[in-house]
Structures are given as C-alpha cells and as structure tokens.
Length: 59
Image 1 (cartoon, rainbow, N blue to C red):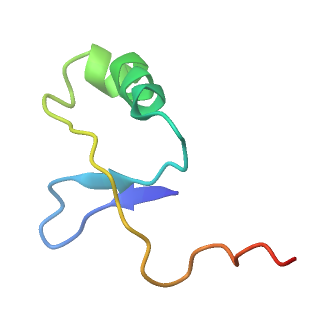
Image 2: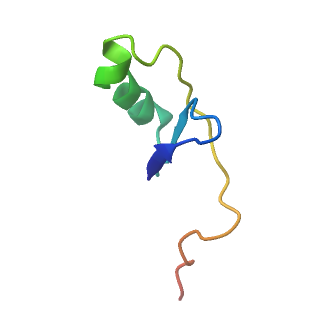
Image 3: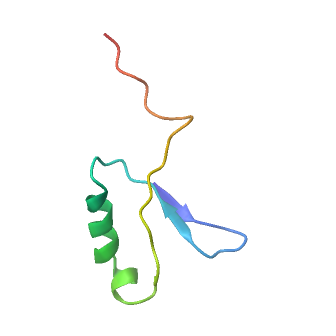
C-alpha cells in the first residue's frame, strides 16, 4: 500500500508487511527514483497498526 502525501505534496508513504526491515531497505535502494536522484532522502520506520489490521487466528 502506498501513496503521495498532500497539502503540501512533499512526500509519500509506503506500507510493507515484512518480518525483516532489510527487505524494505533493498526495495528503496533499488527504486528508480532513488537511484536517479529524484528521491534524495528516505527512511524505514516500524508502524504499529491500531485499527484495520488482519483478524487474529482462531483456534
């Protein structure tokens, strides 16, 4: 899931569901916008889902 921030349109947020943040770093490092200098800064941060996550498994 991802999209641009608005008002002002000065960034974007991408949401990944992975166990290893290195996967996301590799994605960012390989992104054409990053590789060609269009995106000059980015960061990987954990995000805590408060509402709207997957339902827990039932026994």
